[in-house]
Image (cartoon, rainbow, N blue to C red; front, top):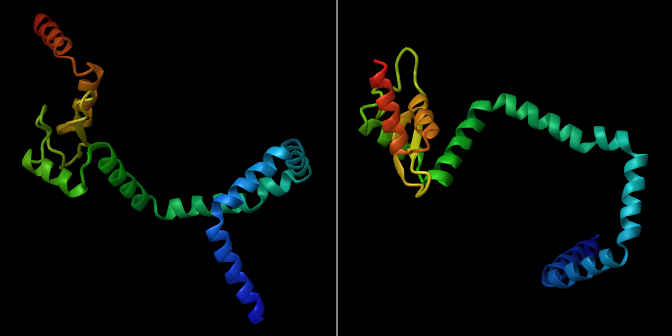
Length: 165
């Protein structure tokens, strides 16, 4: 028993110290035997279609679905936090502060983000520089995006609306 544990520790250390060498050997073995390996994999998949379909990955996917259903709000919240940080370099606290500085209203239409029918606050940014400009409601943010942030197109839209008013 003790000898097995010692060997296990030795193997672990050896693999750690020779990681590049083992990787190189493994790659070379694959290149030398590629056709044979691919054929074996193909035969295995053909023989074990049901096993693969309903196997460990199938139960893992079922587990993931159950976990998602149970923790949907938490997952969505964390996902939004990651997007805010990655795309805009903002934390949820910074976003809340921006909304607070705008008196909890959209910068364009001045409708409240909270209330009877709450609006979805969206981070507005320059698509060229990626610099954050402010927080808009979904409708105003989509409208700006539809005009490609082009002031000329926006002025043309204003002129159009004035002409038919």
